[in-house]
Image (cartoon, rainbow, N blue to C red; front, side, top):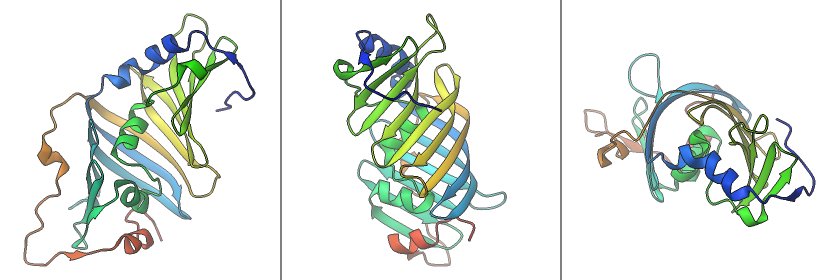
Length: 243
């Protein structure tokens, strides 16, 4: 996607644009979905299928689905605390930073809040006062550490958030909208080279009941003990990486 560049002109309609484009995602308190992940990260090819459950304010659960048997990994996060279980290897990482742990297994440094925003194509708090217009079909606004871009096909069509740029970190693009929520997300590092991933979202259900047990790791009892794994070990052996 070619994003508009240059100074633009003050966007006097920015508050209405932001409200329209983010109404659907802001109404999402919980979401469950499946995502087919493909691309590369850290020099390794990635391909896999994840199931996800996300809830406000900052809870997440991801499971890497295997064709047979136990999942490749189970990741859970609550606020600033994350844990990851590798059931097949009987290894566990506890009480890590969500962004660090998720980066180790996917290449992308996102916490639970950032992950929910990514899969719902949402913005945090765009500054409408500093928003700019590029013709009739593009608007851009700063949003904390991000710049967000809104687009409509033509006058009279609905506005949608189509891209988020995290300055000096990554860029995400959203497409294939259904009820103004994206079903295809492309996220690539900036500068390029660290990761380039496409997320194909399906089975999306919003505002379903997710109790606190959804964001806890399964019990790890059994005959074989579970041994700890460090964040550095996890980075070297990312479960989705095809070495």
